[in-house]
View 1 (cartoon, one colour):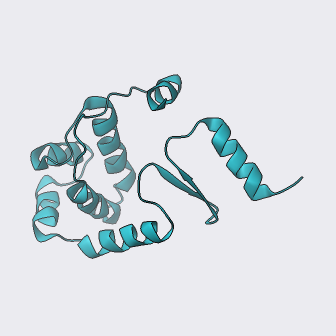
View 2: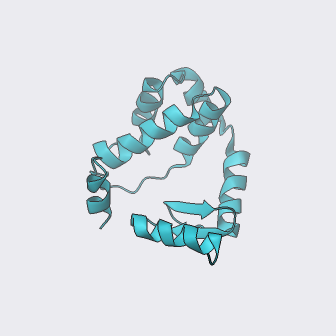
Length: 135
């Protein structure tokens, strides 16, 4: 189902067979946020995982990907080694859990409605209609 939806959108879908521990990826993404590179790093990591079978748990692979996105490799390695931003990542994870999010993808619409999982476009249309209420 997910493969069909992704490919119908014109994207490639070939995720890594490994389910990685993404803590280090989250740490370097927070570093990227501070340098104005969050979107570039996030998109590179997502593409690497979902389309290129990159193992985001492998530190060298992770550092290669963030460096490709313009983030300084040495600074990213230091952020991982020091566990810099771990408080931020933990707080964000706790907030997501509080909202009922325990998997990805997850979408919170208008801070009122949670849509979990890769859903067809119609599911989002129904969710938006639900938020708008009766016409």
